[in-house]
Image (tube, rainbow, N blue to C red; front, side, top):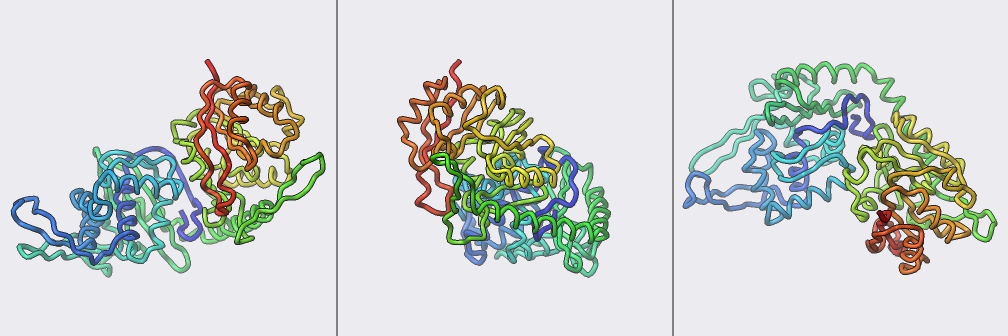
Length: 457
């Protein structure tokens, strides 16, 4: 994965779940962002509980990252959040922010839970923006002096050293890395930099570290030899981002039967409507008015909510929520959108990342029938009901096309009790009012009512 723009250069089984170094890497960057690496802490010695051990947060971070010390990972959690449980909550929140949708974090050590190669690469690209993180993972050796003894931590990523110095490195372009070993399976995250290129390689489930290191040298060299390919992908990505932002700045409406235009009211006109991640194209949260990861979290949508299910997104705009859902194991997805330009852009984004399970169609929800659309396991109706002429017909359409679960977000003027009554009339049994949206950068828009409704059995 290219560190600069987060684009996938090559992937194989990138969404397969496995043991990775993601938990310790996530622990490290959270601690750096929320703590002081020079702060001192006192702990009882593991060997003698009557002896106090004074360490800095930096000492703990180097020990955890260079030699994978699990005890240090737990101490870091205590230093930052006061308890391991509270720190894990921070881990989950940060993972959602980074679109690590296929990861599950249970402890700061990573001994429980899982991640994927793609999620781990996303985390690495984010963490590498921090100079302290870069310094830690690139350090061959760190000396930790205590009153009773001195500890020397050596980086287990052999690519950056053999005898403790980078001058004697196994691979001169390696800037750092992190190893992991669990249940006999080896994994490696390695970062390489040459000229203007910097990229991350993640390997999971390898039989030995020696094989990890050999593979890394071959793969990093291959990427450096394909400079023109990487530049072409980046240029395509920049062109697509401009198209997305331009299309997001207005959308057709049919109020009173007259086509018109609404503008996105943001402090920055150069933004897209909603953030999302795909392997070869990403709109980051800071580049968008709305945040798809926060919308998913607000609805309580997790991987098990969508895995192996068919998904329909009504009024999908650029397709952000469908693209985000494609990282959560859906079997197929359809986006219906009134604006033809957005449909074409969505198709092009899906093609860039080979998302063959996604389809996009132009359609008018005031005309389309249930027979035209079909039935889907899960349906998204997000801020759409305010743009149809006949709301009663629309709610009945939702009932006809939803097999299992509807995630419904009303527009700003949507009355809560009226929406609940219409959903019940449309055949939904369990209707839960979740609250109001909270992901819009314009706080005055965070008043959209949100519901989760399931079909009556």
